Amino acid sequence: MPAYLQCIEEVCGERQEPGKDSHLCLRCGGLLEVKYDFSPMDPDELRHTWHQRRLSGEPVDRSGVWRFRELIPFVSPGDRIISLSEGSTPLIGTRRAGWWAGPVHLTVKHQGVSPTGSFKDLGMTACITRAESRDVRTVACASTGNTSSSMAAYAARAGMKALLFVPYRQISAAKLAQALDFGALVVEVGDTFDEAFRLLRELAGELDLYLVNSINPFRIEGQKTIVAELMEQRGWRPPDYIVVPGGNLGNASAIGKGLRELKELGFIEKVPRLVVVQAEGANPFYRLTKEDATELVPVDTPQTEATAIRIGRPANWKKAKRALEWTQGLVESVSDEEIAQAKAVLASDGVGCEPASAATVAGVRKLCQAGKIERHADIVCVLTGNQLKDTEYIMRHHADEKSSRLLRAEPTLEAVRRVLEAPLAARAW
Ligand code: F0G
Image (cartoon, rainbow, N blue to C red):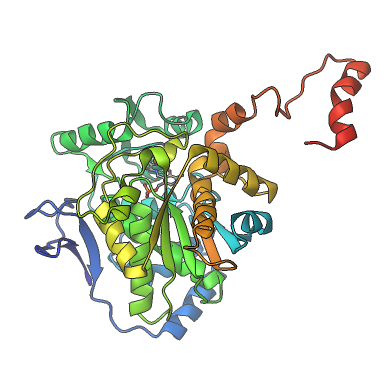
């Protein structure tokens, strides 16, 4: 087996034997990553194989993660792959949003079009497959809602029990409903994700829980395959920038690792710059990079309407920092108002997403205005979650009497004509 776990701390670098996975270095407590002794690959041949697999009817070939399995060779022959045909998400040109944000050449990689509606499915298929190979009975996570829906679905499929900690009344109803629908046991605890996560981590050993949060390095492996799919969709021409929202910073870490490996293995020449965008009220990583600090200062009470990224103590910040160094990346911070504007502009392109996802486009606009991203740059924003993940947000933003496009009329022709008269005359909506 060419895979092993290694501590990312330079002063440590301890290699861990693949036993029952512990997600942190047993020597220094640092984050672990999956490393491979990749045998030499022929990029052209593999590109061809990956392409051919799209025509196959085999479930592992239909998955946009396992189709690229040569990049994640941690599975042993005979291991059961737990998949829901994740990946294969569309790349969509967004002309209006590109004009608004730059002008830049903007496309979105829509991860909201995934089995459970978010990008988490890519990492979850890898992580639950790993758990299955370890005979895990109960998986657990703390979540702002998407990791948990994904965990619950994949655990159900694998026949495992799923236990979930969420901050009380801080995640969208749709996400909570998904987890319940897939059979997870849910504990509402604490006011923030960080609090729920801390409690879960403390209890995990005692309760024999297998954690599937993004500190689990196998999550990162599944998630990193997005870059291979993205490059393939673009004929292996890398964009100038790839933009993601930043919460617990697993996605930024995964994309950084994916890009680095694709470069090292000879699949791409140029490495796109990674851009991480955080919400202003939950932006510890932005502050860290702005101040060029060496240690992250957590935000104790993170605030943002984009609840998916309301996180003050991102567990993967060290991996994400490395990803920025590898890709000469950038970090931006945007207000909730800017997120709402970006979401509306994407909607005008017919593209719906959840608020956290729209932060990417808001971030591009801000970086363009500051001259840090050049006009007409070729940019891919990763839309991480589906529009229907947070309908409360949408309804809240359309409840305003003045701007409302939600009209109400008595059920008579006259009354209906009356409410439509002004908007139709002005074509003003
Ligand atoms: N966008 C969405 C829709 C998310 O759900 C998340 C994270 C992120 C962006 C940020 O990604 O954590 O890798 O930096 N959601 C996690 C969850 C924390 O529990 O669902 P990240």
